[in-house]
Image 1 (cartoon, helix red, strand yellow):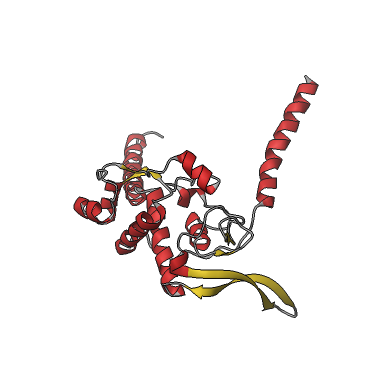
Image 2 (tube, rainbow, N blue to C red):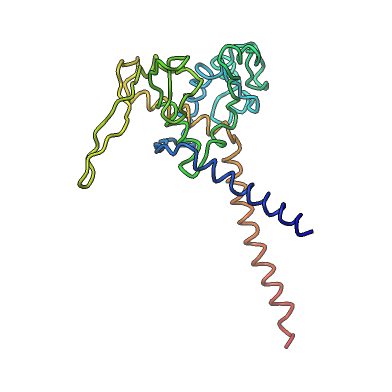
Length: 254
């Protein structure tokens, strides 16, 4: 019995220790705050367009339907005319035609589904939106990588920089940073070849894309918050009624 208890305690210690190792081994990159506004429908609509044009070719969104875009102010006909290019119906899922086996042979790994990436990437260092915003702005040229690209947030990433024509080509360079009584060297990104967008325009474009991906991760978030407030209000009113009933019921009891 004692021997079995020792094994159980040892197993528990291992299970508790492994996550700590994983966190310690993770890359703690300083994430930039994503300047998004989940109530900005114009931003969400631009982000949906960017997602369909640049992401939906390789990445699916199997838990998202096109008709959910009505929640960001788009009419069904607008969705069909501007965001559906595969002949599917408005009520269909945002799938892709690429075969997963072909994708794995081409890229080395199957491109992940992006439906809930904005939620799954949340961590102690920042929200999933912050991660995506920093990641999409963190690509740089790296001749040692098979695709010719690397990323400061996701080292040795297998994905090529799909937005490089817009952002341009960045390189990783050393930068001297003056501290309080010391001078240190750190690596920083430098724009080597400009793209079709200025850095400010590219950042705005990425912010719109991330804003949409946050919406896509939980399209009913706004409704959930509204329902939550209504439920809390109803419970508050019910509490007052129950308390008044209790006072009335026990008023003659000494």
